[in-house]
Each structure stands twice: as structure tokens, then as C-alpha cells.
Image (cartoon, rainbow, N blue to C red; front, side):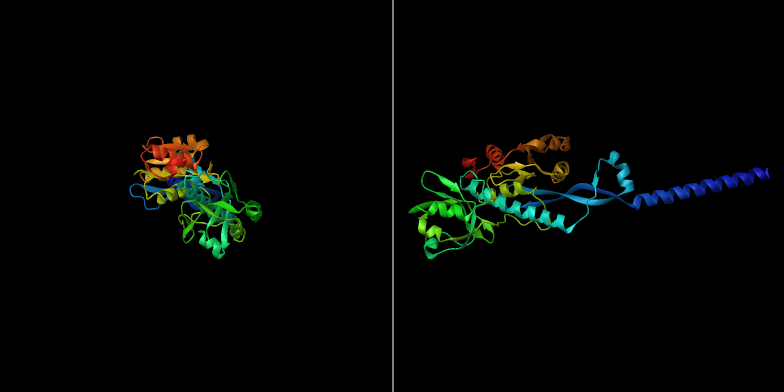
Length: 325
């Protein structure tokens, strides 16, 4: 009996050591970093000051994953991607993408609110103006989008375009997005001025404008909501029609909406913020619909900023842009 008791104790001790070793290994597995990042819904950032409703930019957060989190991702539904590292080059590129998105959104919003179809060009920003140009209504920071005669306006992409338009013209019509404060642009408008005065204006093709600063948020995916919120601001907060609106999508200079990443995570972030309407690029509709399953948020696919404006106008929104869309 004594021998049996001793063997039992030895067996129990080995089991305990095995369990302890397993726990230690599992604990290490749970805290040891893996070569994967996990992507999840991020903060929702409110922008603009609509009369009723809200505009929200959706974001995602990227965190390093442990091997344990990676192993159970198939059960938890967390999305894992190979870690790419936080290189200064990548960070700079994403920051530049946000700057370009801000500028494009401001230009598109200025043209739509001015009842114009976007020209597809960033235009030329005024860096110096003669007294005659100032008298005609041009100021530093204004963006010259197109110029021509009463029949046709030509998109301005460089100084040579401006010289070509003014070469033989006595009077010129210019589509201008005026700088209203800081780097913000107002609704576009047609100005008439002499060809000589316009030719003497100093311009820069490196146009910069801002709709709503977003701090550390990077990348191009806020472009659609930035453009819509700016149209709303230039429409006295009436375009939104009282809805709580979020969305994702890049924006081109012609107003087109382009595909972006992490759509599902942004949809989940918007749902958690009790959003009513979520705009998404047309080709990414199915991703958004799957992510929104079980909720009441409406997914609206759009191919352009004008498409989103049309939907809002039909849903009770009011804006001069409703006439341009």
C-alpha cells in the first residue's frame, strides 16, 4: 500500500508539473508578439455643425497581435493582417494622402455648392494679384478652376492654360473657388475680368485647402464625408436633412468616389455610434451590407459625391448643390 501511495503521489506531482508548464507556455503564447496586426473599429469623429443631425468620419485602430489572439481570431471574428511596420515613409505617404483628400473635398464641395459640375482639375491658387485683379474680385488663396468665354470654360491645370485663355481675349469669365477663412473655400462663382488683368495674376498649381482638420487621422478614406460636410456647411447645415450620417470613400477631383480599405470595421464603428445612414463606394456595398447585418443602419452605395447629395436631397436635405447634382 505504501508503494502504491508513493507512486500515486509521484504521478500527481508529474501531472501538476505538466499543468504548470502548460500554463506557463500558454501565458507566454498569450503575451508574445506575433508578426500580425489586428484591425478593429476606431473612434468616430464628429465634424461640422449642422442644424440637425451629424456628420461622422469613421476610423479604424491597428494594434499588434499576440500569437494567442491570432490563434483564436477565427472564433472571435477579429481581422488579422501581416504587420507592415510603422515606417516613416509610409506614415508620410498616408499623411500626404489626407492632405490631398482635404484639398479635393474642399474643391468638389465648392463647385457643387456653386451649382457646378466638378472640372476634374485642382486649378491654380492665386499667390499674387494686381490691383486690377483685386478690383475684379480675386484675392490671395483663391483657386482659379476654369476660364473662357461665355460659351465654354476650360479647366485650368497650369500657368500655360491661363496664358492660352487670356492670349487673345479682352474679357474672360473665370470660375473661382474663393478663400473665405484660413484654408477654407467658399462656394464657387463666375467672375468677369479683363484678359490682361488675369494674365498678370501669379498662380501656383500646388493647390492646398482644408475642410475639417482631423488631427492624427491619415489616409484618403475620409474624403467623401469631408466633401459632404463642407457642402452642408456652405448650405447653412440643411443638406444633411436631420440624419446622422457617416461613411467612407476617397474622392477624385471630378467628384468620383473611390474604394478604400477596412470598410467592415468602419461600418461597425458607425453602428456603435448609432448612425442612421452610411455611404460607401458602389463596389464595396456587399462588404458594408454584411458588416451591418442585424442592425438598422442604412447602407447607401454611391459612385460620386453628387450621388450622395442626390440621396440626401431626396431624403429631405436642402442645398444649392441639389440643383447641380
